[in-house]
Amino acid sequence: MINYWATPNMGKMHMMQLIEINQKSYTKNKYPYYIYKQWHDPNDYSTRIEKSYVLRQGQSNIETAIKTKTTFGEKVKHNGGELHAYLWEVAKSKTDSVKLHSNTSEEGGDLMERYFGNVRDRKPPDELIKDKDPVEVFFTDKWFTLLQEKFPVSPSTNYLGTFLQPYLKDNTECIIPLVEELCDVDFIFDPYIIMGRQMLGTPTKTLSDLSDQEKYVIDIYRSRKNIIPYKEDLIDCFASKLKRYSNKHAYHKYKTEDASVLYKLDRNLLWIYLDTVVQQVRRIERYFKHNNIEAYYFNMDRDGYKDTFGFEKDELPRTQTHPGNYPQRELYETIAKEYVMMRNMKDMRRRGRVYDRL
Image (cartoon, rainbow, N blue to C red; front, side):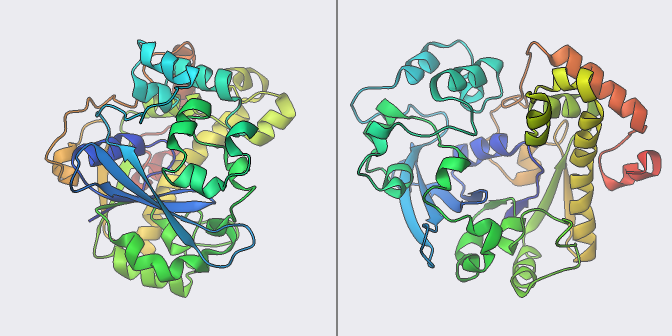
């Protein structure tokens, strides 16, 4: 049993695809609104079962809802009915569908935004949701056929907030009765969520400020293999992070979140962002040391998935969910090189502090 202590955009989608191919189970979350578990249908390789733990607005008890999904690499089941024009374009595209749906290609992000708007404002059309229970619409199979026709993507977190409570943010005690169930999986992503934390080490909750819930979960985690992924290729790592750059404060001030534009307007914003990327990895390392958790490192550029995670099948190229080539890549690599030289960075793990002092 493995905990994957990844910071944002550090191989979780690649891992989820390998987990599905190898018929393993995992727990993940959509912060701050819900946690979900996913496992294989024992009678049908092509089907995954997903159980979500949601707390409705105005309610005090978490309820669960179950839906099915198609196993990665298998033909998607449409169950008849019309398909949204977006799905037809995805089917015709020469770009890998994984990159399209995950927004790791320029085309994928543009395509989703053209049909469904900005990711922060994405909500279903009234004709889909009218007179229906949104939990049934998005967390069960009841309205799957209609979803494929009207809104075959995930709604924004802003929309989820119209009918769900953000219990992962402000009511984490709700998780306590579910701890054993949530941990009874092969893989846990973002393990700190089950402990009742948003991230490790924040201004309002230090690494040594442990709740009873957190102490209890840590005891469970010590019996699991705890893996910290990192990138040896710092230029590639930081360039990819710049492609995914998002900062609502920068948007309010400059009306853009495009790192290539912000580099000209206020590059210090980018330096702070990349500092945070590195500090997040090191914060996890400090947390492990403070709480006597043994760390296993996974070099995303060289280490094997079979050896590290015990997968029997590892048929995906290492670059499966990598952004690949895109218009700003050369510029982002130039920015990344400037940052690495400026910080004298040799290693994003704690051992690199002797050089960069972060």
